[in-house]
Every structure is written in structure tokens, then in C-alpha cells.
Image (cartoon, rainbow, N blue to C red; front, side, top):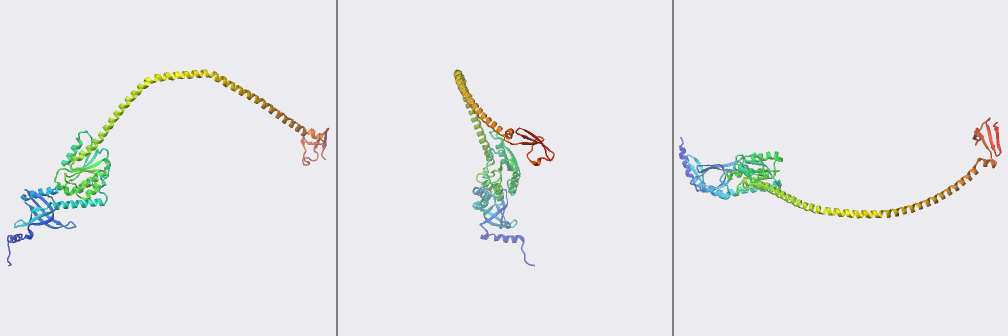
Amino acid sequence: MPQSLTLLEYNRRIKNLMYDPDVQNCWVTAETSDLRVSRGHCYLELIQKDDSGATVARLGAVIWANTFARLDAQFFHVTGKHLATGMKVMVNVNANFHELYGLKAVINGINPEFTLGDMERIRQEIIARLTKEGIIDMNKQLSWPLVPQRIAVISARGAAGYGDFLNQLHNNAYGLKFYTCLFESVMQGVNTVPSVIAALDRVAAVEEMFDCVVIIRGGGSTSDLNSFDNYDLGANIAQFPLPIITGIGHDRDVTIPDRVSKLHVKTPTEAAEFLVRCGLAQLNLLNEMATAVVSSSREAIVHAREQLSYYGNYIPLSAQKLVETSRARLLGYAQSIPLVLKARIDSEKSHLDRLVEATKTAVAASMERERMRLTALTDKVQLLSPQNILDRGYSLTTLNGHVVTSVAAIKQGDKLVTTLKDGKIESVVE
């Protein structure tokens, strides 16, 4: 039989190897996974992924309570976030092997600038892509309605920030009315992006019912903001057809949605305050217009009363003056009528006399012309009369009372009458 070791002995040999300086006090870059805090101790896994996202290395790790409080505070001070799952970190580790619990890396230090740089690198890559595609400022270019009153809200129903927003908006000191509709969404964790995008899709389906969209998140850990730095979410918000207000971060956090939205505010309460200010600005404008209308109306009434008083005093005098002027004019007309009438009658009489004389002259001339024409016609009639023709030696032959002008008009046996200067001859055609 070969010589063998007990498992404990074998583990002790492995443990002795842990004293090698190559695995102690080393700075290691990795991604955090399955991080949890229990009794002040922080338990997590350090993993490494390849370009396809597949995990190629994994190691359990722990930050003991006396070290974790210091490291987490240091990390938060630099990055504004607490240690959480899914972060790229650079940590100082010691390899530790326990006979019962196995291999584990004990984290003694952390470089928060590395994590901050990686977070910013991811954010800048997304911003650069949105800029290259020409969509990063599309939502910012949308115009606000004069009074955005119909608000689509994307938030978790029980979130403290959602309650603060509603309270600030609906209980404003000016009595302004707003109409809100919640499109519920997950606002932290791995489901944040698909949940918010789905809520945006639901709003887009009824966009004509709303003036703007408010995406708010209140309370919770700032580390939960990591999920908002996502290209798909940023592209959806940038291209959304309604102006969007984001209030999902804290004082020092500007996420991708904050960068592409129409308006970025720090808290949900500030989002409500902005909407109230928009309504108040229009309310003040209406009040100013109402005051101006009242003032103008009062001035118009005062001016009208002054004019009425002036006309009340002026009209009697003006009417009296007009009557006197008209009376004088009428008297002048009455005095001038006989003179004008006599002159008109004399003028018409002279004109009539001229017409009578002209008529007499025209009648005499016409009568003379007609007399001369009648004489000429008489001479012509006498010259052309049948008797005068007969006296000149001509005869006139008739058949049955009709003048015979052609031999072809008579036949044998016809009785003809021939009229001569001194009588008539009757004859029969043989």
C-alpha cells in the first residue's frame, strides 16, 4: 500500500505554502460579486471576466469588520459609493488557507481611484457613443409646455422619493393643480434598466395624454446608481418624444440619464419644485395681465367719463351754434330764391324765343324744299303720263284689261283694244 496523508495533514502543507511572499500583500484587480455584510464583516467573491463576459477566474474573499469600516468609508469618500456587487476594484490581499474553511483572500486595502476611473471610463464610453450617433441632446432640444401639469412618473411605488415628490407637488402653497400617473418600475438592482425602459414604452404609447415625464428615485444606496449608467437606457431617454426630468441621484452623482434628459435635478423634491415654479410663473403672468386689464379698464372708464362730461357741456352749445348757422343759411337761401328764379326764368325765356325763331326758320326752309320737290315730281308725272305719251303718237294695246307687251301673249281669236290719242279701236286676232 502507498503511504498516505490525512486530509488535515495535506491541508497543513498547503497552508505552509501560503507564506510565500508572491501571494502575500499583493495588489489585485478584479470585479466584486455576491457581496454581503454580516456582523460587520464583508464577504464577497473576486471574479475576472474575458471580453465575452465569461468568468475565467473566481476567488472567495473577506474584509474583516475592523478593516471593512475603514475601507468602505475611504471608498465612499472618493467615489461617492459604498462597496457593492459589480464594481471593478483594485484591492490589497493576503492569501489565507484554513484547514477547515479552505482558501480565501483577506482584503487589507483598496484603491478607490481605480474604481472611480473605471466607472468614469464606462460613463464616458457611453457618452461618446451617444454623441457619435447624434442623439445625446435630442431630449434637451424639446420645448417645455407653458404649464406642464400632466405628469407621467416613473418610480417605485413605495419609494420615499416618490412620496416626497407627490407631497411637494400636490400640496404646493399656491393651489396649483397637477395630474400625475405612476408608471411603476424597479429603481435598483439588475432589473432597473429593462424595467425603466418598459415603463418608458408604456408612457410613449399614450404620450398625447402627458406634458412631460419624471424619473425619480429616493433613498437607497448610491451604489445602486451603477445600473443607470447604461447605453440602452440613455438612448431611450435621449430619443423620448416628451421632455424628461431625472431626479435619481445625489449631490455628487450625475448618471447617463441625467446627462441626456431635458432637466436633471438632485432630488425628487426639486423635480416637484421645478414644476411648481413653471406653473407659478404662468400664474404670475396671468395675474400681471389681469392687473393690467383692470388698470387699463379703469383708465378707459375715467377717460370715457371725462369725454362724456366734455360732450355733455359741448353738445348744447354746439347744437345752438349749428341751429343759428343753419337758420342764417336758410334765410340766405330764402332771399336768393326769387332772384335766382327770375334770372332762371329770363334765361329760359330767351332760350325759348331762340328755339321758336329757329323752328320757324327751319319749318320755312323745309316747306320750300318740299314745294320744290313737289313741283319737280309734278313735272315728271306729267312728262311720263300715258296721255302725254299718246299725244306724241304712241298707242296702247290691252287684252282683257292688261297691257300687251309681247306677241307671245296673244292667240288667234283674242279681242284686243288699241287706245290712240283721239279714241279706241277694237280688233280680233285672225
